[in-house]
Image (cartoon, rainbow, N blue to C red; front, side):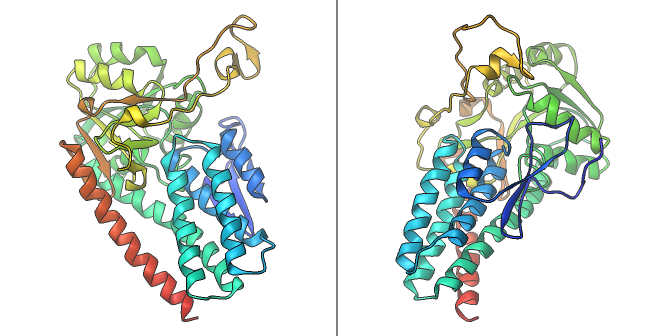
Length: 371
């Protein structure tokens, strides 16, 4: 299929949020423009855009939409409109912490600028710039995750990957797939096992598509084959992303991750979660406190609109599961690889990243105030 290789999963184009419609890949490559916060919320809920970092960037741009379209005539009124938009956006998918992290980052900037008495136009301009900067930051973060992650992959390696964590799940490059892309660029001889990732088939529809476009050797397998592949064939490392990481290192990720990590430990295969520090939520003590989104029954009972189960069959469809920290070898971030005890290493990585963000935040704000 023909596709624009330079299109990002989500970007700001002439006052709209433009996204790749991931629901119709790999058969069709379509770009969709969201012109209102409501349209963007629907896009996030329907998984037109998906992947924690990409959702975070979309949330930032959603706040820019809210600012641009606000009819408020005062700074306080505009900030109030942003608070309303933030809640709408945050509620669209509750498990991925990157969404609320991004909207909060925009709201904090807006509140800070408002307190310094900027004009309405300056405030709106600052919000749009910050949303764009947040997206650009994601690309740099993913590049660093890829470099740190590649260091733990042997020069010749079979890598097991779950769900989709590439350029489609981020603004560009990817997290766990970013590690794989980096290994490929380093001319490592890698082969990737890709599980289909039921029920929405992100592995077969999206990850296989990305790897094949990059000419990286891979094989697609059914989800249930992971144990057999690890026991009978060589698997050197398992990598996946995450939608939220608790302070103790428990990881919430696409359903099936827990099973995969348990099987990997049984077969002495190292397991790494690959995440930006924005996915680390130090306010959550353990995975038991993470809200797990449940999605519609049709995701399990139907494939491409065709029924594969009896009518009215009872369904339980959690979108994510929680992998306890003891099954992880490490957590790869843009600040380096965190190893147990995760309560200490994750806090150091998070605080280091946030201090850098704060410094950049102040610099951008001062630049805007001096314009």
